[in-house]
Image (cartoon, rainbow, N blue to C red; front, side, top):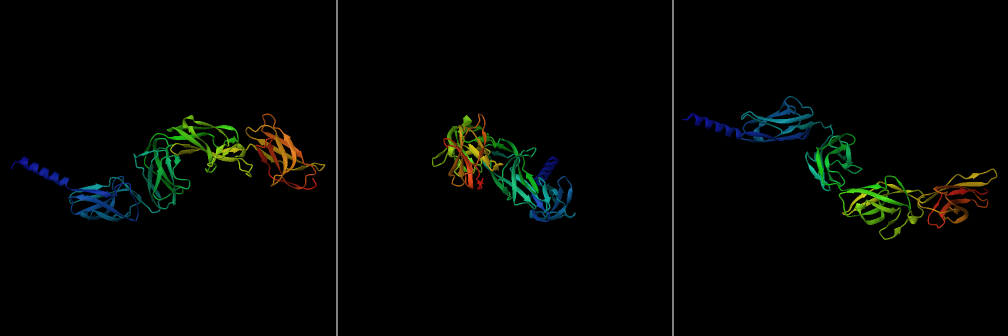
Length: 431
């Protein structure tokens, strides 16, 4: 027989045998968290293998820690009490499963390391978004994580810088998200495109971060620059509402909100977003039923004399809305009192402070009124603010004929458009 033919036949038989015999680990295959002492399934697939398979626990850095068991290769699975080997229990750490079939001399290992953890070790593994994921702004996506050990019922979810892990924005609401392993997030249009990570944090114990992923899409936002946070605007003054924007066109509407975000009324509609500005008479807005509220009746009757905080909301076409930080709207007039004083002759005097805000001009009328009904008791007189000044102080000597009782001081513009009252005070008989 030709020796070359015999050699070729043997080579082909050997290659056929090698190609037809293999074993592959299917679980754990990388990324799993298995708790010491719990039952877990080791699984594999094989082709052309007979006899037994040796299951080894292999250290992630290399080297066999110990043999788990030797079982028939045809079974395809093995129920393992995590950590048990012929070399004793394995400590927590990173491992792979190694399989070896001596009959055919084939082997395989897990593609990636899995973790053995203790039941007392809390751990968060954020696996979605996965490495290299691309998410689009304006779309909804599921953030997913695995948890182990003792953790709280609610977690904080943050978008963080992929390098420093500093927080960029809080994704979950103020009270946190249920620690259920998943949370649906709608990516805001205002977020700048770029690379990020997701952090899931139990504030009392542990946190975990996702792999680096990308958020894509053009920026679409409005930032309200005026009124700036906590600034005070005088009721009735003319002030500019200003904003910057990107990725928007068409018109916007402006709404007035209470400090806690309750809708009060509409300031105006049909304003081109490109203008970046609207000139507002502070306090003018329109309720849904069509009544316009001007600065003269902005605060309801009987309201506290203190100033109040509000917010501005800009709503773009498509119902995308952006809200300012809170700012102060100050009343046009305020009045306060000093303590009553009695001189050596028994005459009682009262110090009265008046202040104005904005465009209130002209003289002010001062009067003594009954507390409650505000019935006129006595006119105190007419006084003017000094030029360029917004505060006025006068001392009033209380006439002896004024009877004992509960009173207050009222100030108003001469045309009665603006007014304010003091806190009530008591006058005693005989003063």
